[in-house]
Amino acid sequence: MTGSSTPRTRFAPSPSGYLHIGGARTALFNFLYARRHGGVFILRVEDTDRERSTDASIAAIIESLEWLDIAWDEGPYFQSQRTAVYVAEAERLLREGRAYPCWCTGDELEAKRFKALAEGRKPVYDGTCRDRVAAPGDAERPHTVRFRGPKDGATVIDDLVKGRVVFQNAELDDLIILRSDRTPTYNFCVVVDDAEMRISHVLRGDDHLANTPRQILLYQALGYDLPAFGHVPLILGPDKARLSKRHGAMAVTAYRDLGFLPEAVVNYLARLGWSHGDQEIFTRDELVAAFNVEAIGKSAGVFDVEKMRWVNWCHLKALAPDALVRAAHPYIAAAGLPVPGDDAWLARALVTLQERAQTLVELVASGRYYLTDDIVIDPAAAAKFLTPAIAGPLHSLRDALASPGDWTVETITAAFHRVLAEHELKLGKLAQPVRVAVTGGTASPGIFEVLDILGRERTLARLDAALGRIS
Ligand code: GLU
Image (cartoon, rainbow, N blue to C red; front, side, top):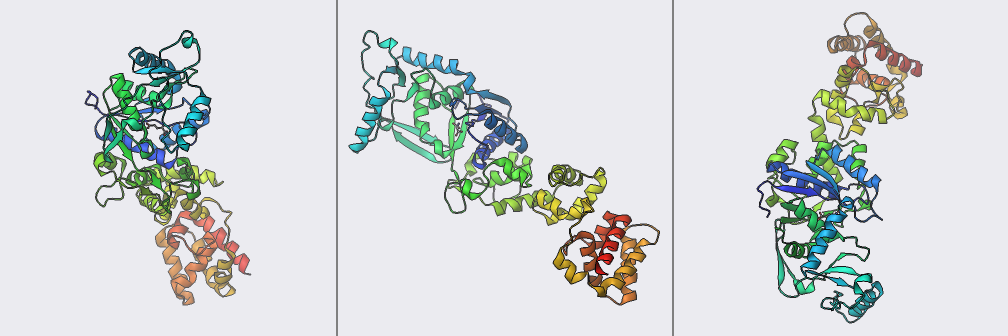
């Protein structure tokens, strides 16, 4: 651990694609850890691989983190802008004899690798240049710089999640830290950055576990304090294979487009591989208060979109009306529907749908009839409920609703009951045809409420259209 008592964590994405579910969870755990302990959360873009890194990916990662409100306190730092720092540290290791130039060519290394594999040996670098005495002219010839690692002993990780993990140093290669074009390599940059940025806790996917002993040896050679490491199991698909595209959407923003709330995605991801008793639903403040590394699970979490939909439903139904309106606005527009100017009215409409939808996309689709008069009448529902037999009662209701006076749930209810008595009908016999007439389908919130929100004029127009359709 570093000397400082303020925890410093980081999320260090390689920008070669979108931010996927697993990356978002890694970011979240680091963010929550920092928040929980009054620490600092850093964003560092690991863009040393210029071939694979793209600006579009950097933008997508930042957009996703912003959407999830996983806010960083420092950064973003870009490794591509820090080459001089890494080269200086590599040169320091060279001067101190902790690194050495290596003149083996790519072809030679490939041949050695091939031979080792053919002989059933692990293809670690054979150390040809490790103790080579430089010959005249060597310095001018292209060479890489290799870390001079210990050849005996073991490197131990007391992992916060996995417990003690031991690696034999003899199995670890003398890592190339500078390529022949003097660009630094991945593991070296990570170590220099984590040390320079005074990272106290490295929480990352366990696909990085094999890098950690190499990184620890570099820390030691460079004379840096070690951070604490926690390697989090990967996320699996429902078939228990590593989560991949064939399990559905991987990009975090795809879930935004599907109508998930960011707080629900954060809640779901936090619980995927971490637990706090039986609690499933957390506000952000509750997550910050409860998050602890000890309760990160040792086995992989299984991604379950049905559960995420349920978590989303829980958050959706808990939204206050004004928050619901704000959340729904972009989805109304995205559905190609006009966004009502009256937020108070829209809030009343959306609140009637709030507990019936699992996503914002579903919510907007289910309330289409509030948002446009261009409603689509389901033909099967029309055939069943908009029949000549109901024309009389529907007509009476139309006239009762048309008579001047207040338009409230109470007056609408009274009008219904007058018509039901007059025609000796049960409520359902009339409510369902009305529902089809005004919403286009057979499922909606309470019909009196729906009419109240639609208003007199729009209700009458739709009843008239239905009557026209029947005759
Ligand atoms: N850049 C690495 C990645 O995106 C993460 C490295 C780390 O967390 O140490 O997988």
